[in-house]
Structures are given as C-alpha cells and as structure tokens.
Length: 85
Image 1 (cartoon, rainbow, N blue to C red):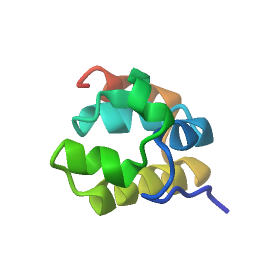
Image 2 (image 1 turned 120 degrees about the horizontal axis):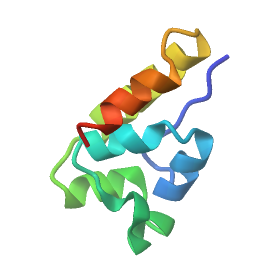
Image 3 (image 1 turned 180 degrees about the vertical axis):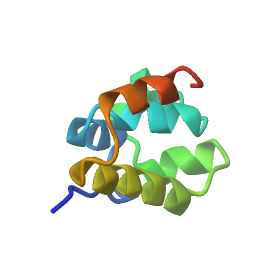
C-alpha cells in the first residue's frame, strides 16, 4: 500500500515521506521546502499563503506516491519534473 500525506501535515513531515515530493511542491509554486516555515507550517497553511488549493496539491502528491508504489514513475521522471521547478 502506498504512503499518503494530508494537508494538515507539516511541510517537513511531508518531505520526509518521500524526497520526490519536493519537485512537486516546487512545480506548484511552493518554493518553501527550504524555508524556515517548512518546519512549522502545514501544507494547508503554506498553500493559503501562496494562493493555492491545498486539496489539489495533496491529491497530486498522493497520486505520485501511488504511481511510485505501483512502479509507474521513476527517479528519472522526477528529475525531469525538477527541471521545470
């Protein structure tokens, strides 16, 4: 069973689930992965600050985790995504 995240999780907690989540956050406009707020701000709070829909981001991350668990996404795919962050 794939890991999942929720929008009430702190950004650093989400990043600790899988390092491949960082490019997803970056591509969605959340460059806060290295910001001091990442250690105390939930995905929902960070999304609000950036004018983004936390549920959409949560869904994208969980879809990525499910695809990775099924072997349908590779580290190379993530490297390609990171180029656009």
